[in-house]
Image (cartoon, rainbow, N blue to C red; front, top):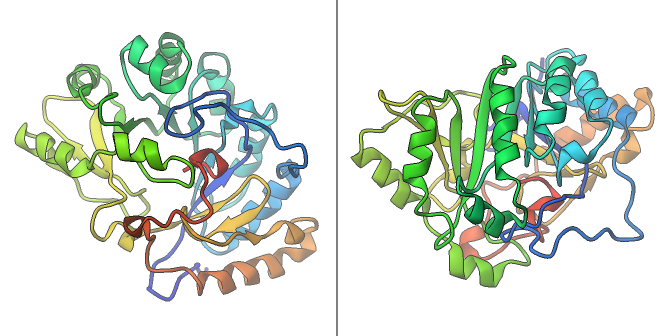
Length: 327
């Protein structure tokens, strides 16, 4: 199989596909005023379009798929999307990133449909902190949903927490208590500047390297990175069942191991989370006969992928907020 490769020798077995733009949370770092639909907005990709997209990507080496949003659980046909992805040859892992509000009602069905990996956003373990960050007092039911998911045989369950100075940067002791007996991975994600959060970023950005130093000082060891892993640097400790990952987009050489592409809910290819261009793929998703043209378009666009983002220079590209592409 001829895989997708850019001019820097990086290959791309990992696709992050947004299936919906809407989100039902009001996270302070993303959608503090909530989601507001645009009246002229195009419809998200339908199930057949998604299936054609995935079959095309599978021809050029796709092995890991992550479904994102917005909040992907708001799509009522999410189980059918998962099942359709599971039927595509070559896709070995199907992951979902969710805020967890529907876990207790729907996670068993997602698992039955073929979901293999689960990420849940949990920015704090105290109800008041969680409410302040997300705009919703739903921490208890989300944690119940995670416990339910832990009994369903997922290959991996990861929890995501955006690291926020003055809001949740003192939560590490609570997280360590949580991880001592639970075989889940916690991902601390360094806050990223987007098009509409400049003032918030200035107030709450905290470099992740400080947290990494704290982990190393207390006996946590850096693990080797798997070939198809995401961008996290993962740490383990012999006294804890869980692991801790650090996603530090402002760190040196963060983009050197990039192995993922993104497609928006309307079918635009994004070569980088903070790129300036979206390439419409939807015209080649209307008929199975267009697959060769879809694959050719993917190969051509990889020649334009830059060596890395320019966040350090304050350039956020097309990303107004992370709900538009799912992070």
